[in-house]
Image 1 (cartoon, one colour):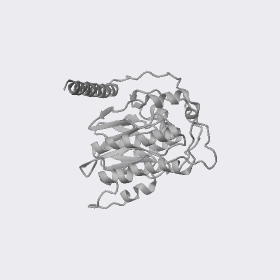
Image 2 (spheres, one colour; image 1 turned 30 degrees about the vertical axis):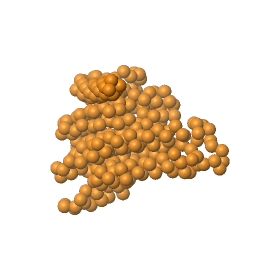
Image 3 (cartoon, helix red, strand yellow; image 1 turned 135 degrees about the vertical axis):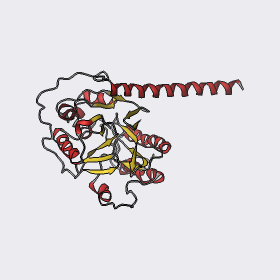
Image 4 (spheres, one colour; image 1 turned 180 degrees about the horizontal axis):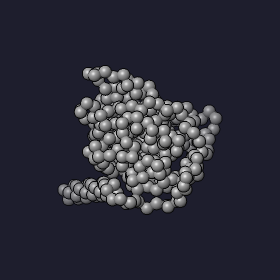
Length: 328
């Protein structure tokens, strides 16, 4: 009896710590959004003026026509990658930032086509530290929405600061970060609350998102897996696999019925563009298909690496020819 009671008390204490930690994270994020100039610690790198050209030069992929996906959600970008714009009723939130300065300039122009004002962007949420998601941040801060807060994971930020392979794609070096995204954090902007879930694997600092959208006034829950695809080391593939199931746990509780990806194709939105009044929304797939269809495609990416025999046991160590790893 005493042992059972002790275990119960221990569980209560652990739950209290978890709740208090999540509340503290949410309060910190809220304070950063409301306080002008509030920022997390960062390495203060010089901001050259004017901005130098990026390593990619001009826009590397063709732009697509921007599209309104839901009452409060838009997609803007290219045939390879883009950004989501969420209208919170009290300013805009942008998920990711484009590839480089040229891409960011194009995104700015396309946002205006939608009848939105890009200077009203209050928060830029970065899914992870790869150049095609972070590369436009400095342009936006310099030219479009200087008062917007930038949020990404601390791990991702550290990679950008210290790993040449990542930072080398971004010229100049990264903009400061105002909010460090942590697992379980909630950030509320206007009437929209964004749930942050740590999902490493595609990159070390990758995070995923859950937030509400509405279709003709009806509420749905959208889930965005932050990283598309997995690399070929055992550590990363195992992390990716675990992150998919971890994200599933949260999306199940949230009853996500809309699956989104920043690496979206024009074909993904074709049905939305031609949708007629009274027709079901093509992106609302239901909670069962969110797992069996949307999340399954990420599991398939993981399994492909295993089945292809291309997975490396350690970074830089190639598996011997003909030695396919066992299924995991």
